[in-house]
Amino acid sequence: MTDLFYPMARQCPFAPPREVAGIQAGGGVPRVTIWNGTRPWLFTRYDDARVVLSDPRFSSDKGRPGYPLSSPAAGSEVTTDPTLLIMDNPDHDHYRRLVLSEFTVKRAEALRPVVRGFADHHIDRMLQGPRPADLVTALALPVALAVICELLEVPYEDREFFRSRTHTMGSVEVTTETAAAARKELQDYLVSLVETRERRPGDDFISRMAVRHVRTGTMTTGLLGAMCLLLVTAGHDTAANMMALGTLVLLEHPDQFAALARDPGAAAGATEELLRHLTIVQRGIRRIAIEDVEVNGHPVRAGEGVIAAINIANRDPAKFTSGDDFDITRDSRHHLAFGYGIHQCLGQALARVELQEFYSALAGRVPTLRTAVPVEEIRFRSDMAVYGVHQLPVTW
Amino acid sequence: MPGVFANPVNPVNREERMTMKVSLDQELCVGAGLCVLSAPEVFDQDESSGVVTLLQENPDPALEPAVAEAADLCPARAIRYGS
Image (cartoon, rainbow over all chains, first blue to last red; front, side, top):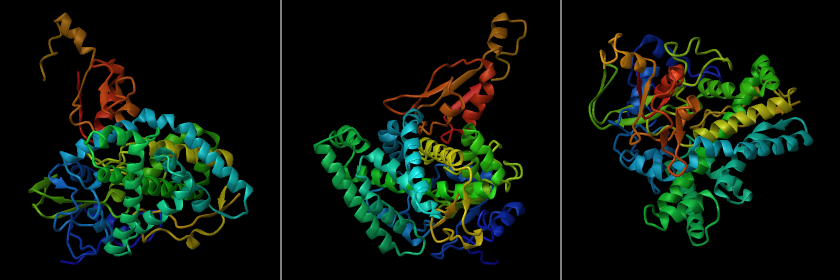
């Protein structure tokens, strides 16, 4: 048996590695070898990915022996109070429900004008500054971080602290200890914020949750701190990378960027298609079987790891016609970019609002936007759990 | 349940064939909100809990494609529907 190492390197910066497409086309479910030497099953088909992500016999508990961690840094997730990401039921649904009211579609819609304001503000600043500009540091990160700072009502000055610690935790090249140290700093900061807000609550997410759950004993300060940590890290990193990489893809398809510039109503479809096409959680979503499971006929035994390769599942021709093509007018809503099953992204309504407002503000206000360097000179985030670009020099 | 609404001579049943029935398992709901985006006429989220609520159990059959979409998108498989 050939030893297939996962993940493979990409040949094209805008597509998953050719090898995973080949596995999908061949219809097999191979075992792959990952960085820690374990050999999880690799599921590449859309229907299989959905089963892996929704069957409760697959656990998200990264503390279980043999868990197919996506990187050494992922091992740090068990070193602080647990986030929703590593909880199984019944704990997961119990704790998710304690914070659910903060993440409804209505709450996200109420933030739409605020998000638009952040986008406009940073576009103004970019337009007043020198050309070329780096879209990552001038727009994507500031807008995504401003939204999180708004939610948590933390000083906007703390954004560099949030960004740098998240960056360390998201690297696939650092040790577990390095990631754990960054994680602890962030967790300690957020726990002390929880304690402060519990004593003198304001009108923000942390205060509301501290009053409702910490004061009443339904949640410890540590657990609420971990909730906030998830909000800070997953909340801005994924959004910022979708903003920058999504912009690059739109600029690579000038007719579609122009269509978006003409019609802000196209932003919703464009957002879903960018989520599908890019699927920036590039190393798949991993689980471990706690019982024997059959995934559409493929047996997985208790104790074995599995990977749902959502980036290629989102191009499965059985689900998406010409899945490799980028087309903002297609119906992409069934994509798995936010996951599937009970762990599906808690902040997805807000993420949609952020991305829709960002793309439509940018295309509408800077229709002459273009990349300032050839694509070959752009550094892509192959070294990070979340894909994207490290920099994106643009001009207009 | 095949057969329940199959008698074409029963006027009550004929009436019911022109509606659809939606059910929701709130115990399963994880509040992803995709149903609210797909079929806002049928689904809403409770403001204090975030859990999805049914606005109507027997929506106009014209809404069936939207309800079908909501049921398929639901990550917790909490939505059932039928005629």
